[in-house]
Amino acid sequence: IKRNVSARAWFETYQTLFIILVVLSGGCYPSLNLVSANIFGFAILNTGLSRFELSGLSDIRVITTVVTENGPQLLVQIMYSFSVQSLTQNTILAFTTSIMSIVASVLNYFINKDKDGSVYDVFYYLEFKKKDLRAEEE
Image 1: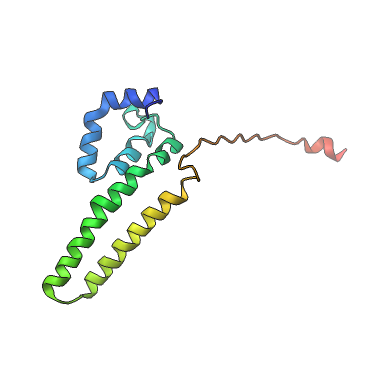
Image 2: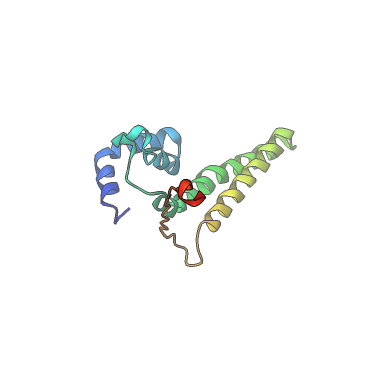
């Protein structure tokens, strides 16, 4: 974001909106995806960040998902199981899905990083050419 002039200008202008979205959604990464979606071409929903720049910020997603959401949730589930002195089916299901979410977040983080730990912009160009079928038939 430091080198993206458009993103810097957007955050200077709409910082309050971004903070409100983070508080309402409970996460920085989902809010960042929303305000970077460029929905209907509204300037308020276009930070100017590319998908590659967003994936470079995936550290935020891992930290918020694992440390602030699933970690405490697992702790509460364990404390609940000790307090009732049994494992209910609901607790087992919640425990399993929390662990799966942690594993998925960590795997996604490491899969999307290269060996140096950085993400690179890759550009592809697609060209369409119309064939003249009449010229080929003659």
